[in-house]
Image (tube, rainbow, N blue to C red; front, side, top):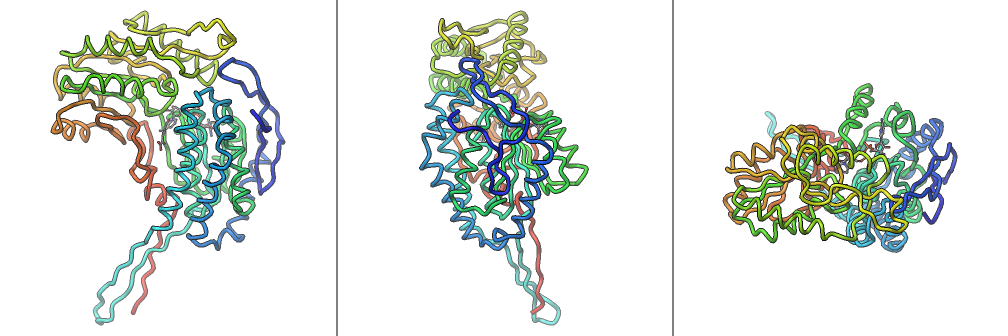
Length: 475
Ligand SMILES: NC(=O)c1ccc[n+]([C@@H]2O[C@H](COP(=O)([O-])OP(=O)(O)OC[C@H]3O[C@@H](n4cnc5c(N)ncnc54)[C@H](O)[C@@H]3O)[C@@H](O)[C@H]2O)c1
Ligand SMILES: O=C/C=C/C=C(\O)C(=O)O
């Protein structure tokens, strides 16, 4: 990466802590070192955040904060190419993806919450009283305080800013810990928050792994008032135990095993193209990706053949984030190949160049596995989708709703009545009909079952990151 990875605590950059290697997923080479924040630095970050609440930041108006969020958005836009290069270097994702999704969405996250905050109103009621003079009840919203934000490696800046923006909007201070695998854009964000004039200690950044390191020490810190986390469901359980000790509120965006339904009345060309996006975007390393697709039997063979052709033709995709993740995905594929049928892909591509040292997996289409097979039940988080047929609408819904997760789903149908019957019947947080990952940032976003706790997006985030208080004045 271009500039060195540093923590940002109390307005100062700091590189203290034992270094660990930063690896380029495209070629599998160590390209830098990342300092792992010692417990003392995590403690210092939480204290700086607490101190900042008592400083000038604590008296900034919502309009002040709204303007600050827009200045941060301006700063990311000014350094757009730097952010794109850093995100691509850390994740290996194609530039086309980082420059049209990741970085623009980070800008949009700050602008959306800056605008929502400026337009937000609170509730008030005129209450009748026996003496006829009445009372006025109104809501006052206060920040939660010091918020820990812990984010994953797949959409590093998008998912970090999706929490930081609303947390700052509501007047909190933040200690952020990005994934140890993708620290670069978080460092640039720290620089931009300073350039935007955020007082020291309002935004703090510590690097390092999770367990027995910065992540764990942050979530267990008694000075942290709330935790916003995106990552694996198992990690969520661990963090929830830490929060339970303090009854700290949590907002969790967790794992998924997203289903798609293709009905015979769908526009098959649209459904195939849509599934190529929903299964293979960022090589399946997006929590919303489709990993299991159920296709009405009468069009199953045609759909499977066409999707397999598209998967074989795919190029310009990126690698898995790490050797360990690549091995996990390939492990699933080899077991699936032994137990079912591989229609496309199934292994690691050979490029015959220096990418062969990287962590690549072919876009893969599977079929023929039982519903309780690990490849159909467990989150793989790679470029893999399993196809199975169904006969009735009821069966399709039951198949989609099976399993421990409930994050997202896609429904491909040309029947408007079916669209409005089936989508709401799916036990997920978001269902897309004849599209995928079309996002309106005001809508509720999150998962049910093992896919999350709470919702992000629009007022859902602003409500999570604030405490409502009722004031009643006798007139
Ligand atoms: N629901 C969503 O919106 C969403 C979005 C993106 C990714 N995800 C999920 O995230 C996972 C992939 O990301 P990942 O591999 O980075 O997840 P992960 O849970 O391994 O790590 C996520 C973050 O948590 C930290 N962490 C790990 N153990 C911790 C602990 N014990 N205490 C505190 N922090 C800890 C990590 O350092 C990292 O910053 C997938 O399961 C994917 O589905 C969900
Ligand atoms: O990898 C998961 C993607 C999550 C996306 C969002 O949180 C979003 O689009 O707001």
